Length: 53
Image (cartoon, rainbow, N blue to C red; front, side):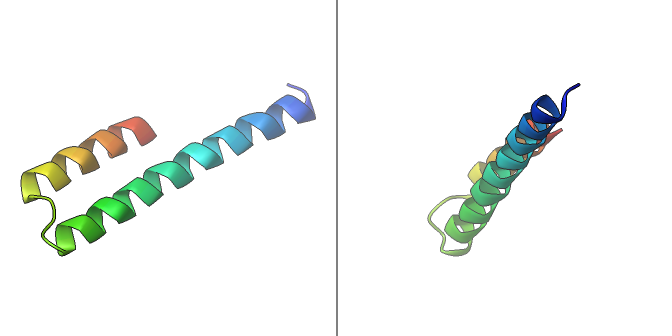
């Protein structure tokens, strides 16, 4: 792999990881404020964890 392709791949993975962590953080805040139920929170968390793997 060239350095450019490797850098782009790393950047893409970092963006995806950041987006997943941001979504998990937002879901946690919504759950803490009782705006979403525990089931909704757990489902979203499980989906995000699967997506991150």
